[in-house]
View 1 (spheres, helix red, strand yellow):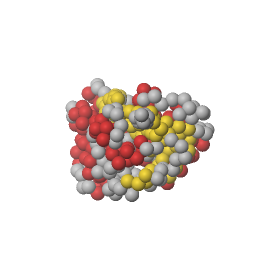
View 2 (cartoon, helix red, strand yellow):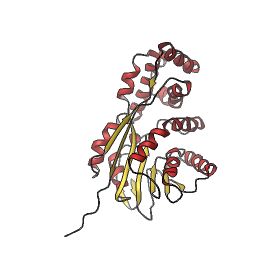
View 3 (cartoon, helix red, strand yellow):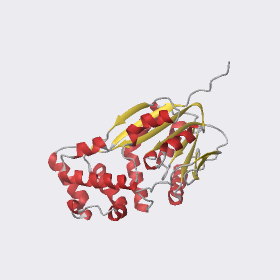
View 4 (tube, one colour):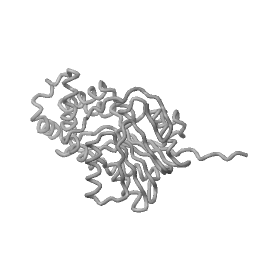
Amino acid sequence: MVQFAGTMTTTRPTSHYALGSTDAEHERLIRQAALLAPFTERFFRGAGIGTGQRVLDIGSGVGDVAMLAAKLVGPSGEVVGVERDARSIARARARVAVAELHNVTFTQSDVSQIPSSKPFDAVVGRFILMFLPDPLAVLRSLSQLLRPGGVVAFHELSWAPFLLLAAPLPLWSAATSVIHETFRRSGANTEMGFALYQIFQQAGLPAPTMTLEMPLGNDPEFIRWVPDVLGSLLPLVQRFNLDLKPLGDLDTLPERIQAEVSAANSVVTWMALVGAWSRKPESRRRT
């Protein structure tokens, strides 16, 4: 059962979060977030998230999206982050304390009971709906926590263009294909980004405004994303008995991918970042 501020919705069991919650995964998330920050900040600003607002961030992980939102809403605003994993939320709280962000709090919630004494101005999330077994039910429940006119804004992924553009580089393509297949077998929706258009409307929201951006790069910090994710997924890769032979020695994979990209004198992409935002309809007055 999923409970949101007194509203009870029945869903399928929570899907397995493929990437886990190890210290190495926490560090990977922080590195990833630093590269994604300009994209998410631009998306949130375009959705109208700003000074003085009360924002709910779901699936907060180690706190990067909540911290970004906190800077947008400023000291007069408030951000409430919801995360089910105890280790992740402890790391998020420690990071917020170090950053001296006094307008952020975190609530530990397992699929998800979200207490709220007053409505939120916005509900946001990044790379979270793709891991939920029933994102439509969750979105419907979340919208009940919003004030009329409040914003729903989610950044999700589309893997299709990423896999297509990876094809010219055999090693890079092989690694991304293993990652994609692992996510797919774990139950994640790797095309959640484009699905948001229909899901928003099915949840009773207006058709969302949508964007698509694909980060490009060829420096080691950019390229290491693929070996990093593969490392976090390795227990599931082995559980699903996926073939790793085309990747060779995983210890040298980052250097060999870097050499492949350098030899091609090219850049590579990350997944397509699909942003979708909409506003909860204003209450209609009875006549």
